[in-house]
Length: 197
Ligand code: SF4
Image (cartoon, rainbow, N blue to C red; front, side, top):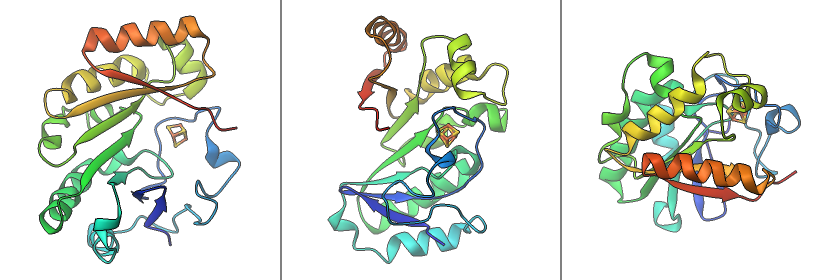
């Protein structure tokens, strides 16, 4: 079972296969891996202890960043992520990032963002679209108000950590501009990622 894997200079934590979206572009439909090496389908979710042990057995000084993701949505294990990040930072001062669809507060029906303070250095939120209609069509979220929810999550998270929204560069330029304006209205940055087919 692959709990951690390397991608570039980062160490990724594969924490869950659960997801609150069913994106049309999701790589999981085609591939069991993102690095071409490790099978990221989990036979079961690793425990908090197993995750911590798997991270700490690595030589952390060789990585730029520890990234909590998953072949799914990591926010399903929000409390555990924050506890693990805190414990890892205690052992070694590595930068941490949460890669999320921004549904954490919708999943737990409360504001989870204060927990990010001091343990998660960056939250990267997939914005994917410029409005609710396009988001719903692309991501098929289980939540009715997913688009508003992810923006609200980003707005709140900004109080506690660095927030970056992401889109891919196959969006038309006018849509990218609209996304840029949304992020500016929240005071967050937008990163336009290269789309990998
Ligand atoms: S949020 Fe991520 S893991 Fe979930 S369906 Fe979309 S691309 Fe796949």
